[in-house]
Length: 236
Ligand code: NAD
Image 1 (cartoon, rainbow, N blue to C red):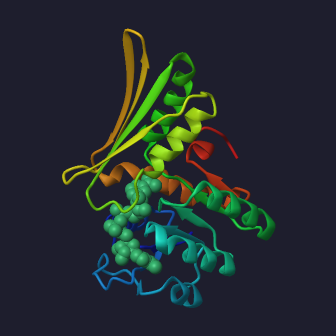
Image 2 (tube, rainbow, N blue to C red):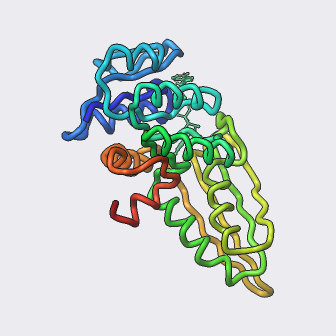
C-alpha cells in the first residue's frame, strides 16, 4: 500500500513517516507539509495535498495536521477517492455526523480516531463499563503546551461514550504544560470511595501500532468509522 502522510513535518507526522517506512508491507509515497521544515531524509516532499495527489499514486492518506487544515484535506481526499486515516482532533460531533453521511453517499472510507494508543482505547472502554456503578465522574486530561484544541478529542470521546450509559453531566478539565505528552484520568466517585482509570502516552511511538492497523484496514470498512475500538475489537 502506498501511504502519503499529511502534516509530515509535525510531531506526529514524523513518527508516522518512520513507522510506515519501517513496515515491510507499506510504502511511504511521500509527505505533505507547508511549513518548509525538513522531512525525514529521502522522503518525496510536497507543500500541498492537492499537488501530491495530482502527481502520485496513493492508496491511503494519513492526516496529523491541525483542526483548520483537516476539513479541506478531507474534501481533497474525497474528490480523489483516496481513503483516509485521521488522527487530527477538533472536528465537532455535527461535523463527524455530516462526514459519516457523505462518505456513505459517495462510497468513501475513513477511520477517524481521537487516540490511536491501545491503552487509551482500553481506558475509554473501562470508563464506560464502570460509570453505571458510580454517582458522578470527572475527566482530567493533560497535554503538552502546544496542543491547539481543548478539551482534547480523547476527553470528548470518553465523555460521549460514558454519557451514553450515564445520565449525569461529566465535566472535563484540561491541563496544558511543557513536559507533558498526552495523559488522561477518569475519576469515578461514590460516598466513601473513588476509582481512577489513568492512561499515559509518554512517547508518540505509543500511537504507531494503532495507526498502522488503521492503514491496513481502512480499505475494508464502509463509510467513516469513528474510534479505533471498532477495528480493534471486531472483525470486519
Ligand atoms: P504539530 O503541530 O507538531 O504538527 C502539525 C503539522 O501539520 C505541522 O507540521 C504543520 O506544518 C502541518 N500542517 C498545517 N497545515 C497543514 C496543511 N494544510 N497541510 C498539510 N500539513 C499541514 O501537531 P502534532 O502534535 O503532530 O498533532 C497533530 C494533530 O494530531 C493534532 O490535532 C493532535 O491533537 C492530534 N493527535 C492525535 C493523536 C491520536 O492518537 N489520534 C495523537 C497525538 C496527536
